[in-house]
Length: 229
Image (cartoon, rainbow, N blue to C red; front, side, top):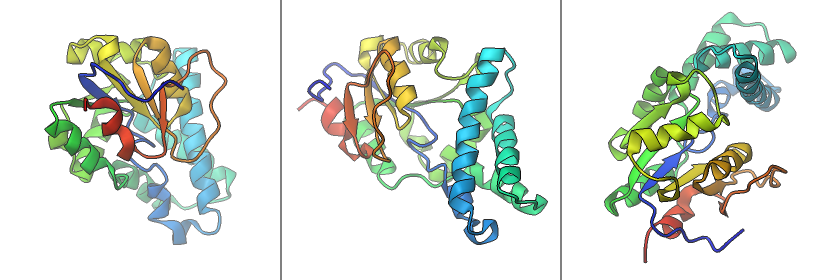
């Protein structure tokens, strides 16, 4: 990757799930009820959630992210032999108030105080994102929360990333896009954003046409990349 310093950035745009919010915290809150398969069930839930967004986009069978999340949960529960309607309801409710990663509020605040515009670009439905942002208490640090729902297609469709330009009135080269999902980071690079991959789980890089321009283990290192000296 090139030297991690992005000149001329006017907006920092963040993926939500896995980047700002811990997707595994929903199961974590009910770990005892889920039992010994909690980690495996959470991983299956997340994997199917992503798979269904890609598959539905390719099939032109869009439903909003809350329905995708529920469908993926149903698959995960059945796959791991869990039959508990009350637990299912509680897990879905917990997804509306996922834990925010600890460094997120401070990073957003530092960017905002330096004059940067902050935004979310997410697969999440507007209602889900509103609930997550409110629960995390970060709404005052954001200039926009952008959902794919207005398009009826999920990332990594190029039209999704174009929403940022339309909403914020910036050029591609003026956007630093942050995602913990390597495939999302690669797609944003293909679109023309400057991209920071927040590699929270130490994963290898994807074998895709374009790559992020910088890699950090948490968002704590972002201000040093996007803010001028």
